[in-house]
Length: 271
Length: 346
Image (cartoon, rainbow over all chains, first blue to last red; front, side, top):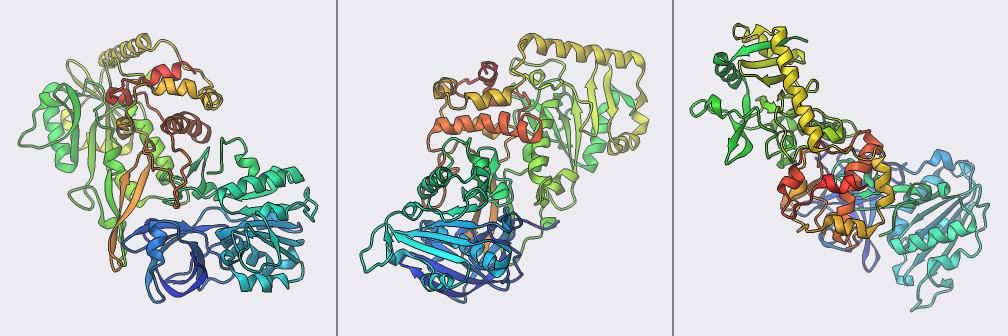
């Protein structure tokens, strides 16, 4: 029986500054981590501990793993001191992936906020890898300011992909900005797809997810077609330790992506 | 399977034989309470084996799901086989005097640690190397309520042997092949149990059932899981129920079914060890996420969560309540919060 608590070593190949407090770490694990978009891993910062992160790279590219991470606390603070060549640990993948089979033939309406674009990038790359399988792909992304936008260059490239429609907003623009100013829901006044047949995928800060979900429901998306990243304190990743309980679910095992239909009866599901 | 009779003069020899094969633990009365005691041939006295009393103060979960243990190391990985119950790998443990209310905890832990996609090799190894010998509770105490959970004050499955204490000696029922082996090795001491002794045991068991029924006459709502779901938002009810709770989480520490744990690392960037310790959902920081958000910042939310976990989610997902009626939670409670009163109101 293998030891599920044992991380495998992963070397940092590159660290990319995305914004003043968000970096993308490019890792090379000693063994392949066969993750699918939506699944997460437990990343060990040796000497500090573990924290859960969702890879932001493509599931079709497995020799390396990218994780885009915002500095928020003790573990990420320690991680931000790490440099290329340093060793980390990794366990996983854990949780359920996006059900891409169910997405086939349907338009996909993706809404991201801040660093929440990181897991959505893994989804976006998986979708565009086999774009013919899906309908149109809409990406609506909001950040606090233009400086807080992650994957700036890639967003420009993605806009050129046929079948992809991207719109961006910032809460406030303190530098020249040609797109919309306002929270991300300001991009959702018109939803250019057949909501009854499409799927919506949301990831971002809890308050953003709450209002985006409300907007999606008002627009007519069925609750079972709204996929939300419900990332709680996913401490063990194995569905055992209890910390990530959300109503009847352990988000590390049953999620972290859950549909609105699954969580709608939980009192205050968004933190 | 068969039931044997071990006359009083032969009991000590059998225990000594078992202690030669296993790390043997038995219930002993220490300052009026029952505690698990390790068999030590130099000090052991047969009169100290308190089989007729109720369950020990400590749940048996600690024998299988260690309160603290090393589970990983880095960069050199830790092999689970190298970690085992003290004093070393391959040593087997025998718990002599497990009670019926000790078993639901095992069912919960097997569900958590061994039934999912990821299996805990430490738990699996300990379980495999642990022999369980049960004993009846002929005289349930005021804190016992296993009957409300559909359990009995004696064990007829889920252990290797089941012992009933009679005036003449012990009746030992064989429940597994492994248990049979333990009797066969010491065959000369055992006799086939006669009907008269078995009838005596049944009478003793029925009296215990009757006592439980008398002290816990009112059954709970058969739709308890549903009742908790409905009541979950009634904060006044739960505030009243939480009453004098001082948040010591003694109830969780002694609960045989609690399974939460925390992983933490100690070391430096070059080398570290990962340890698993029991954790408790009453702690304010328990569910807090990186960045500081907390889904249950108020104690009353954590109090309700405990009831939802044990009586709603476990029932809905596993088909049984994560409670054994052992009464440890309120025996321990400084605020004297009796879970029976709370659940009885639902």
